[in-house]
Length: 147
Ligand SMILES: [Zn+2]
Image (tube, rainbow, N blue to C red):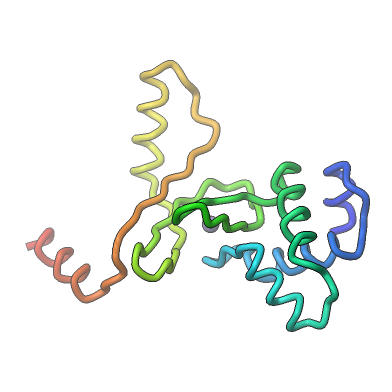
C-alpha cells in the first residue's frame, strides 16, 4: 500500500494510508462504490480523526494518480472504487441507487467494433445502464424473450 502511494508520487501520510486501506477493503472486487461521505462515516466508526475535507482531497489525489476510479452515476454525486484495471460496466437503480457491476463480451465486442469503424482502437470503456431494480418483472421479461 505504501508502495502504491509512493509510485503515485505522493508522500505517505497517515490519512492517505488509512483511506487507501478502506478503499481496498471495501471496494476491491465487489459491487461497492463509496462516496467521500461514506469513507468519512467509516473513519468515524473506526475512531480515526480525519476530516471530510481531507477525505475529499485524498480521494481526488488518488483518482488523479490512477489508484481510484470516480463515477458520477446519479447527479453530481461522486463515488469511488479501486481502479483494478479491468473495465467493468455498471447497472444503476434510478430509485435506490443500488449499483451492480457486470461484464458482457457482446457489449465489449460491439464497442470495440464501433470504435474501430471510427478509426479508434479501444483502450478503455465504461457503460452505465440505468434501470429500476425489480427482479420479478425482469424474470417475466426474460421468460417472454425465450418463449
Ligand atoms: Zn465498479
